[in-house]
Each structure stands twice: as structure tokens, then as C-alpha cells.
Length: 304
Image 1 (tube, rainbow, N blue to C red):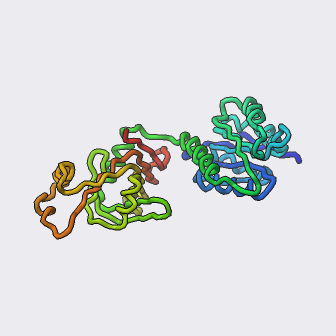
Image 2 (cartoon, one colour):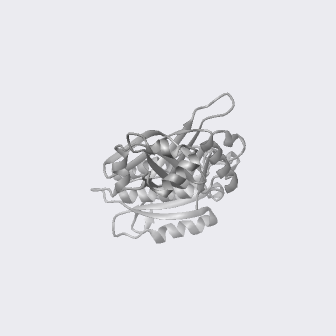
Image 3 (cartoon, rainbow, N blue to C red):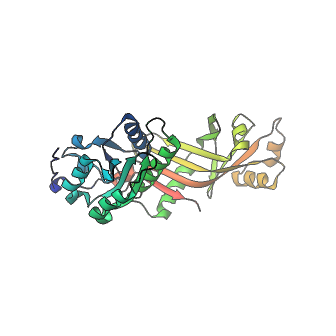
């Protein structure tokens, strides 16, 4: 089937990373993989080649393109789409993929297509799909790799500016949700906190969340700010590792001093008020106002 060529005049670059998945599939399992990948990648849509119309290229700057590979050839519709639209595709950021049965090779097929698109291709992925049983852990890892490549197209602030926004956001608030988990047990607990130099501190009694923390010290801290007359919606997700400190420890005394609380009063309570110290490793800050300033609304900062 002939595929119409899309005019380059229609192409404008969106401010924020947005994905278009262009695919063909031989069976329901392959279509299920596409849906899962799209869920993980975030902002975007997926299309069969025949559904991709002329208005779409102006809305996407990250393309994931692929389909079944059999007998050393990729699906003819995918190949036709690439050949007919290479003029504007080479202006984009592209990841190629091929579906194939376990044991079949598709890397050389993808390499040949990548050679025709030059530097536009930033990744290739062979996805082995067993129609009788999907390996969802493997699919999720592929989706995470695609998402990472997609987010590298963000228009980013300088790291120092990102940290400044994050710390201002944290200092202006005192309540968050602390998420913990181990195995099938997950909890999200509303708590009060205070922040200092890459650490989120939480003073609290013992509770169910400690059962998860004892077994898994990886945690997530989330904050949300609804829109106001002066600012649009904003949110912050922090991931890191947590330590538990007993009131008898020197670290506990140090945390109490940072907070400006009365150590002796806390020690005299009829229950133990533990200190949780979340050492932040990664912060993902989302603020709609940034888009109006020409930056991606989502900014990432690593506390290393």
C-alpha cells in the first residue's frame, strides 16, 4: 500500500518531549507491548502507519518506529513509511525497534535502516515477543530505556537553577506523602517534614511504614501544589534512601538541632518519636510555568 508523503512545511518543534510510536503488529501480543511502552514513555500517542496523518509531525519530536521482522526484513508498511517521510524524519530524534520471535535476529535489519536516517537515530531495540507468554519485566525495561532517551530531548535549566527551584519549593512547604514498599506491601503516608541540604527529615512515631523501611530503605517523597492566581500547578517527586535514628543517637540530636526543637522535651514524650532521614538521590520537579519560559515543565536534578 502506498503511503502519502507528509510535507516538511508542516513540521515545527514542540517545546517539550512528546513521543509518537509508529508501528505495525502481527498479533495481539505485539499490540499489547506497544500499549505498555506508551504507558511508560509518558506524553504521546501510538499510531499504525495508515493512521498517521499530516497534522501529527508538528506535535512530536521523539519517534519510536518499528514492527515485525521476519526472514531478515522489517514490515513493508514500516519500511514504506520511513522511505516516504525520511526528509522530515531526519530532523527528529528516532528509536527503531523490531519485533521478532525468540532466537531470530533483527539487529542487522535495524542497523540498515539506521544507516539511511543517519544521526537522527539515537537508539535501536530488538524486542523478542513470545505470543504465548509476554515477559513483562523485559518489556518494562525496554520502556524505561525509551523514556530515558525521550527525556534527553528536554529543554533544561542549568542544574544550579533546577536545584534552586526544588529547594525553594521544599522550604515553602511542610507536608508531603512518604511512600514505602516491600514485596506486595505498599504504603503512602501523609507526614510533616523539614528539608536541609539534600535531606528530608521526618519525625514520627512507629507505624506500618516502618515494616517496609526495615526491609527496603528505598523511598519516595511526593509534594503537590495546586494552581493559584500567581502560579500554575507544580509538583515534586524525590527518591532516595532512608535511615532510622533513635533518640539516643548523636545523629538524632543533630537532626533535632537543625529543626530547632527541644531535644529534652522530645525525649520526655510517652512514646518514641523516631527520626527518618531521607538522603535524596533524584528530584523530578514539574512546574507548568516553566513551559511559558521556553523550558520543559519537567526538570530533573541528581543530588550526587
